[in-house]
Length: 371
Image (cartoon, rainbow, N blue to C red; front, side):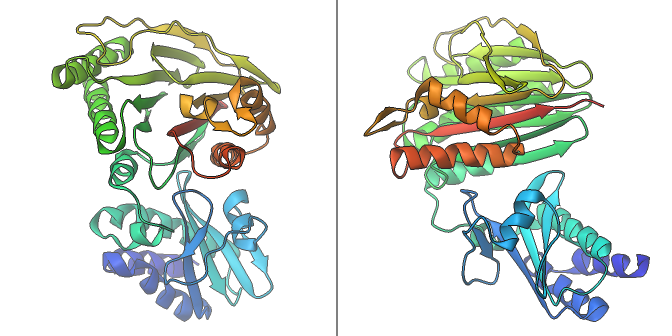
């Protein structure tokens, strides 16, 4: 067992960045007699599993590959085995293996090693990024997706996920997070404007907030520094609505700065609680704004949901999506993992409007379950 896993690790580490999957496939053929290995990556919309080598996309959620992706577990369908390719909760897709021979535990660990290697090489080759697209991204969307730290994260005390829509043409909506010792930072942003201008504005605010966070500043000072950065470039003509959160993982204490923020809800024991925060000015609206922190506690097992105004204000022939429908849908997600919850919410929103969203939308979900 150890020899095979060590050989798999060497095959991945020694492969050229664009041939990681092919080198792993060669190892699987030699070690287990698996002569058909294919990586299916999840697309930007979380709606299709796309084969790296090209070919038919898998869109039916009842397909074995999708069951493996959603349940994060091995699924065997006849002579075919599907394994989730996931790193610290970041779901890249699934690995399809045929025939379904070999030791399940070893192969699952090999799929996890593949996920870590993909995370390592994605910055040095476009192959995997391009293969995960079912259509071309707009320039603004390219900027927004490159800005994200990842789409999901799972650790012993929390699980979080976020999603942007319209996935291939998102403009100003974004989110950011940092998994630090004993705490997790979570920020949602909505830069005003359209296209590249909105994406550039959100990028400026995100990097200003990261710069302040990494300097060890308190949450209110992070907001003030980002406010100054946006004001310095735009003089109040452009601004960014933002919600800054810091969750203390041992205690569940949440520190918040609401700068014209998206909507914040807590799902607790099957009921949706509207978390009231004192709204402050968006980042960059006025020069020298002073921001104040607010605090509240999560209960064990709470789910925190943040959505931008693009969700609440979505309109169809039947009216506005609104608070009541949103609250009901948040309640309906209580048994879903955060990534499935945000995917389901935005899919429901697309179905509600009957196609692509007119306005940007971001949804972020975080579960807290301390040891």
